[in-house]
Image (cartoon, rainbow, N blue to C red; front, side, top):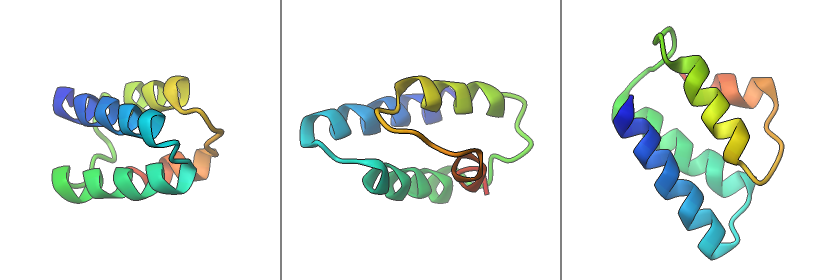
Length: 70
């Protein structure tokens, strides 16, 4: 999961530089799911969701966070 967190850090840095919003984040995060496979049920999933929620410059619903894991 350390790789996923590093990728998320890069996505958030890119969003900050480019001014990208939620749609860009969701698109890039979907790419992570494609790259790393399904992460649902992983013991660190709650930590990943917390990491995203703390750093996202926009609100994400529970449903959007759930969509990131499948």
